[in-house]
Length: 130
Image (cartoon, rainbow, N blue to C red; front, side, top):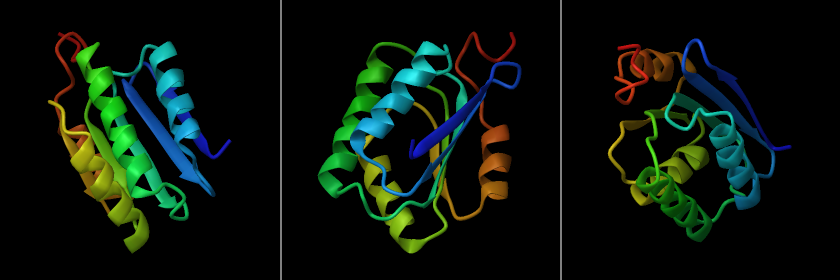
C-alpha cells in the first residue's frame, strides 16, 4: 500500500506517509480507514515528500472536493502536509487550494516544523478534552 498511517487515539493524532506511486484510490482508502477508526476529526500529519508526481492536478482537485464532502458530514481536524521536494510541495498547494474548508491546513518542508504547528492548533470542539 502506498499510503501507510497510524492512529493515536490518546494523542488524537493521525500520521500518514505516502511513498511511491499514489493513486486517488489509495487516498480514498486512507480517508475510509481513518473515518472507520473514528479519527477524521483528529489532527493529521501527511508526509508526501517521497511520492512521484503520480497525482495530476485533476485528481488532486477531486480529492480536495472529497475533503469538502467529509467536512459537510462531520468534523475534520487540522492538517499539516510535509512536502520537502519542490514537486510534492506543488502538489500540496493544488490540493490545499481545492480542499478549502473550516479547519487549519498548512504545508511544511520539514516534519519537525509541521509537528510544532500542529501541536499549537485547536482540535474541533468535543475532541479538545473539554
